[in-house]
Image 1 (cartoon, rainbow, N blue to C red):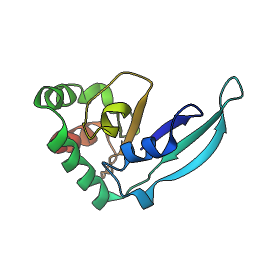
Image 2 (cartoon, one colour; image 1 turned 120 degrees about the vertical axis):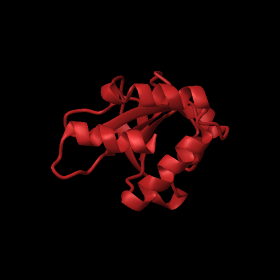
Image 3 (cartoon, one colour; image 1 turned 90 degrees about the vertical axis):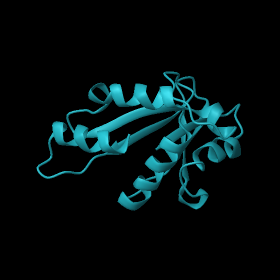
Length: 132
């Protein structure tokens, strides 16, 4: 999972938004330059299976029912051919302790690789369907 903190944003607030889902000490940052040369901090956290199950539990507990239904219905469009499940969560809402889906670029970008054997998109969609 990752989020971008523009030079005009408080990096601590972006980190706080991510820490709803992952421990603060698992978040690391990388500096990058934006298109116009502006500084951007990319904050990310990579989690393994056990932590991802906790992430999905927190997600499902905090996501409003209508958004859980939306997420579930959109599984086919959110799982790619490499068995990655993608979604965006509202970064500003997360900072306030709320979990909401968004299509905005001002988001927490979530990508979850769904491991299965054999690795097939259909199997990944089945697994994700059980989690959301």
